[in-house]
Image (cartoon, rainbow, N blue to C red; front, side):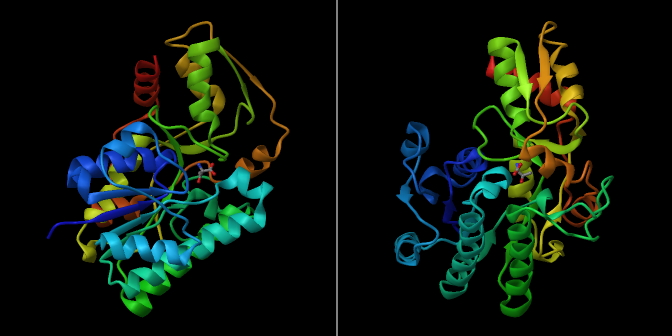
Length: 313
Ligand code: AKB
């Protein structure tokens, strides 16, 4: 069966790389990039593009009727830091955007839906080390509790209506092809650009703030991996923990110094993003993803730093 795929929110950090990988796998014309804004030249010219607003049901319906997708990836969202500046907008987009897509997926019999969750679903009372799949979850950001509620809706649509919806709890994602926007883990991308350009970086998290992170190519591999898995192997229909590595700003800076010995880092860690990071896990137990559908990351910290420096250079 030929897949026809719509990616909503295709211009973002994940969308940019996911669309290009999906087009390699499924063919350019079978992957429709859609976003509220015009994409870059490459995305626009490598396959179809539509303007989409996930909160505008007429717009969404017309795109679905035109392209008749077998799969939809919904990536449009406000992330943790910007969500705290616009709490109601974040809730509206993250929640109603998801519900619109889930309802259209049922109405148009779309075979599979992908929706990303995040480590932000955990909160101050979740275990910090090797945070398990199932534990206390008391997120205190709008982004975090919109993702937790979204997970519950995904599982509900699967159990109640049989909708094949799949999801991953992404850690901080680090890649050189696309820029992050509005997240707490964004420092781990900005640091590379500043290190190569100016040999110095002012970090908005403290030197010892440890967070789970992943190279973007592993995130894309995990995403396509769970979407390609046999339905019977996807046993968790809320969202899977996935992990690759954990590090602090200081340990990242130390690794960068292997390539740029005079790189310096300073810390201005009294802002709202520090409080968000302090409420999140330090590391993640992803044994269910490994066992159920064979998840395995490729990049560790040294491999990630080498890859980022070589490519941004
Ligand atoms: C953020 O920092 O908000 C995101 C995330 C971990 O979900 N990168």
